[in-house]
Length: 183
Image (cartoon, rainbow, N blue to C red; front, side, top):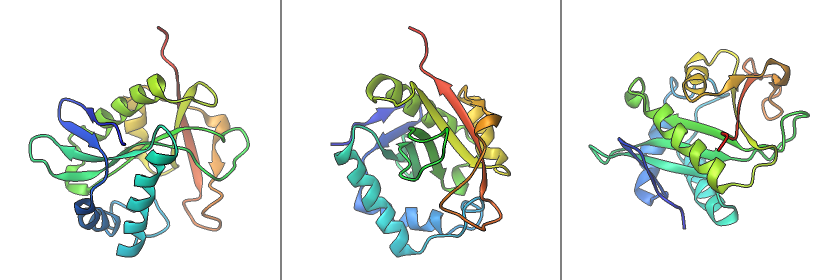
């Protein structure tokens, strides 16, 4: 069962079948997917929802569906994941990430939800290096700003070429990290 997290404005919850249509819409938006190799088809998006749901059954963390508390609208995902690919000096790791529908950008939802995901990670997840990371393309300044807002710091020594995107112009990624808070 997926635990639920509440922030002042968001509910981070398990995935529902009704999330698939709006999730496919945001994955088909070229602005939302600007820093990915391509948009996703409806089938690819649905497969991703099924995979994200299953990950909660496999481990004690994952990516939550995110709902606004004021409108109850599904707006995307925020949460924790563990890359299955390998990069020296980075993996294994736990990553905090997000993807929100464009109409919900600029309201502070990503940092609000990501901060809650970080707290959950530090309190409930066995972390391989007592840190949580986040990474994105070198040109994705909006996501990098979210990383900065939640207290993550850039680690230039860990910049890497994403192994799942060979030859893509956005293959180079920056890494931000944050250690477990002192008690």
